[in-house]
Length: 279
Image 1 (cartoon, rainbow, N blue to C red):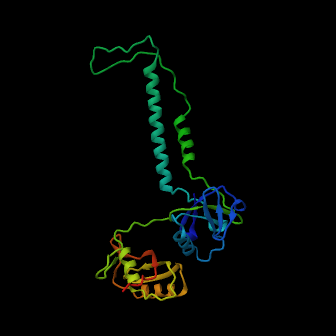
Image 2 (cartoon, one colour; image 1 turned 90 degrees about the horizontal axis):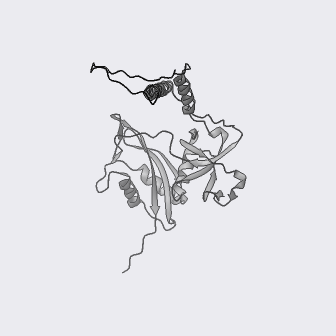
Image 3 (cartoon, helix red, strand yellow; image 1 turned 60 degrees about the vertical axis):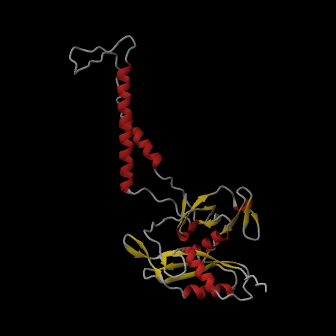
């Protein structure tokens, strides 16, 4: 798995070649996975372009083509984690070696049987024993296992291109509390925000049916910041959504670690022409 730092995501590389993928109006269609592969190599706003692609995908899954300069190999293990892995492997290896030695002592020759002496607290085992190998097998095993656990470094040439599926973000922050929308008559979560926006939009006859996808952040003071339309519907519809969201207030900021934090949102706003009422 590779990292896509500009997109704040990960990439699962694919073996399909770009030339073998059939061109279509939306991008290129991959016959292997039956999905459109989008070209992100010239992306000027990576995070917004990826959000728009996910919003447009029926299942939210996105396959793309990326330049080598946009891709980064997996990070190496930290020093503390490396020491933990070494200690764990050594403990397991020593335990296996001790079990092998005990099994060799117990096996012995089949015609010899263990004899108990008179002293109850002490038992003497008689039998043939084999000399254990002088070579430290546990150390060799530990070193081999450690090499297997090291992350495989995949060389990425900045002049080449890679194709694959874009997966979850690199880091997923766990919030203690999401922002709360404090408006009477509306739910406090995302559904209440969408409901508020749709109720306050002034529909115009030229608005087409469809969805506008927007991203914005509720900052530590509860205000809307960084509003971006990642997938628009029409200039007038997009402008109306922006107008309503910019005028929104009444947010209680989210919390993490006992402190207020800025939390991003990505929401779809549906436009549908009102059904004319029958007399």
